[in-house]
Image (spheres, rainbow, N blue to C red):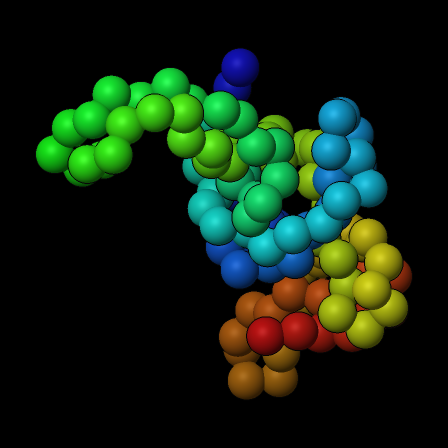
Length: 109
């Protein structure tokens, strides 16, 4: 798989899963890995990890944690309409770049 150079989804965004086992569920993005083209979404795609006790994890056992999802399988949720939307980039009057919702045409952040 080819590495992504850029993504419109960032850490802290609210996204909804559009395909797969977790389809329809939404959550906050915890991290974005552009080289692998993956995102980790809070409380979604939970896996069980059998872990031995070590310096980092004092208590071993079966731990549950989030597994990465492909960026193509999640979609940004518009803060205005609360629906999945595509994200565009536009220049503001002062020259800064800002993301905007293609569905509601609202600029955010």
